[in-house]
Length: 150
Image (cartoon, rainbow, N blue to C red; front, side, top):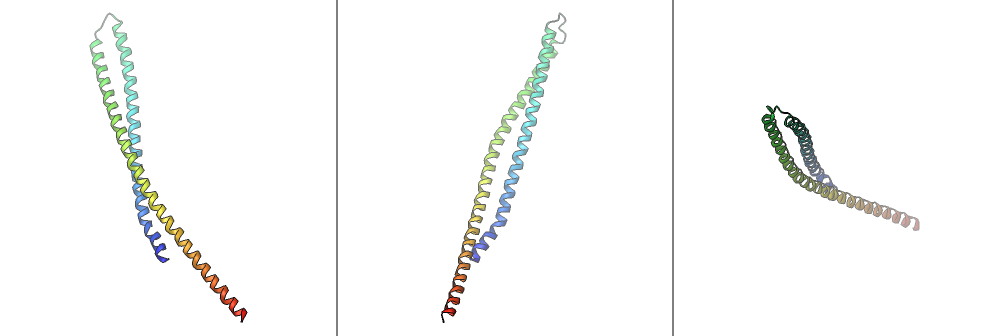
């Protein structure tokens, strides 16, 4: 009986460690997601900058004086390559996010398994205590009945 209680208590540090691991993995996932949001925001800013550049380039092409045409084209190419770099970064971040979700899912399963085991031990302990209490009450009632019968 005491073994069940000891087993349940011995699981507390394990649960704390698993909870800590799960929390750390969750923090890591949140960090990855924040990085993804920031990168997507930078992509949108680059996209807007590209659209503005295309508009300026088209305006320049509409004029007879095309002195800035080559500089605008080079600038647009630069913005486009920066956008592409950010896009590749987002793809990489999404891969990291997917891997982290898998790691976090496993950490959650480990934590839940230990909690379930601890609950099982506590339930078994409670059942054993109820059985012993009932046995004590039965013995007490039997003694009382035997005294009254004499």
